[in-house]
Image (cartoon, rainbow, N blue to C red; front, side, top):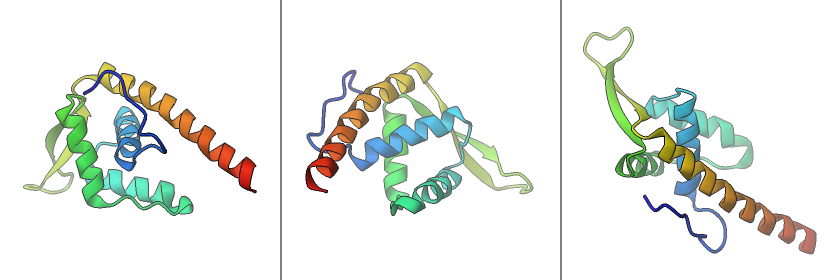
Length: 121
């Protein structure tokens, strides 16, 4: 993972946005892959944003490749043989740094959006 996140030039990219939420949801111990997706879809439904399955898992894989998260398989409650993949931290401090860097980027994006609304409406 890069230590310093550079601006994308316009608005924050979808995968970076999802990674931010995945880190926060892992902090809150919402760790089950499909449950993460369901929660995000419900949260962003009023805004017309529906994250897709593949983009969510690409973001999770990025976080695993960056040594922020790891997969842990557990038996599914009530099922004798079925396993479920949960996510937990490998390096919580790295996750906190990523969130801090992305906050700066989100604030820059908010400034762009606020300016566009003020200038045009």
